[in-house]
Length: 126
Picture 1: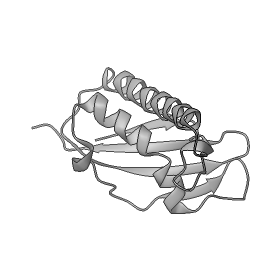
Picture 2 (picture 1 turned 90 degrees about the vertical axis):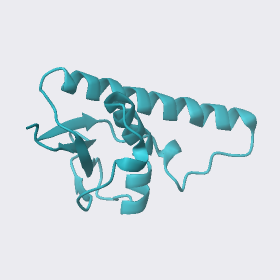
Picture 3 (picture 1 turned 90 degrees about the horizontal axis):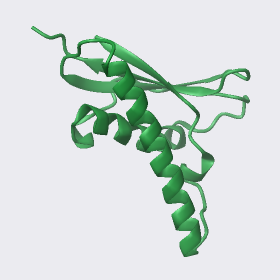
C-alpha cells in the first residue's frame, strides 16, 4: 500500500546550503517557513489518511519536479524536504528516526507544475 502526497517545491530558504544571515530576525523568518512547510505536509497526510485504511508506515521516497533544468543537487533537494517529512511523521504519530527513505530520489523538469511528490509506503494490514 502507498500514498503519494503532492507538495510545493520547498522554499530555497530551508535548503541545507541556504545562507540565512546572522540576525535573530533571519532565524525567525526561516523558522516560520519551516513551520509552514511542516504544517502543509501534516495536513496533506491527514487528508490522505482519511480516504483509505492504512497499515504500518515502512518508509518513503521522493520525486522532485523543478521549474527549470538548473536542478538542485540531490542532497539539498532531499534536505529541504525535512520539514515535510517531519509533518508526515506528525500526522502518522511516529518518530521520524523510524521513517527511512526506501528508494533513490529522482529529479526532473516540469516547468508548468513544479512540485515534490512524496510516496509513503505501508505494510499491508492482516
